[in-house]
Amino acid sequence: MKFFATAIALLPALASAHTIAQRVRVNGQDNGQGNGIRVASSNNPIQNVNDGGMACNNGVSSSSKVIDVKAGDKVGVMWGHVLGGAQFANDADNPIAKSHKGPTIFYMAKVSNAASASPSGLQWFKVAEDGLDGSGNWGVDRMVSPRHV
Image (cartoon, rainbow, N blue to C red; front, side):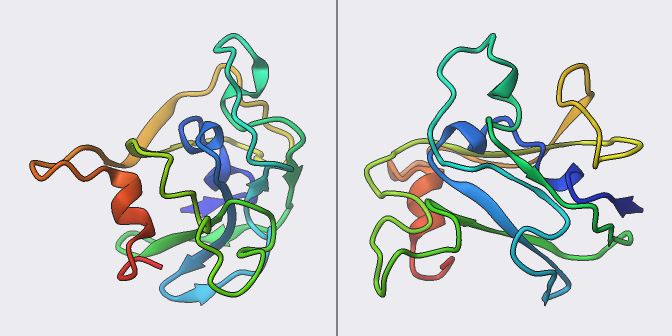
């Protein structure tokens, strides 16, 4: 299966949760900053559910790089609260501030040409979710835990 640059980052949930998808790895191979994805210009949340930027945020840049992903490949996304990753060594708010308690949800949509696709009218599918567990910890808590960073 081939994903154009923007397909992997057409993300409704995390685009509104103060973190930005910035890099994609396939089987541990990093494809580089902003390659193979759409990258939002800021981590500011979209609060109006009728805003066209709800799916991918506003001010996104698109990459025309195609990332090959085969069945069974492991795909990872690097998230950060600002572009380029941590702002400084031991940046406590990277990839997301610990105070932003809540679930993490990752969606994608299949598109025929991700470089020019619009996020409206797509058929979205959930890739992953992590909510509240029995001990009172949220998906964000696990996202920022040292074993995930």
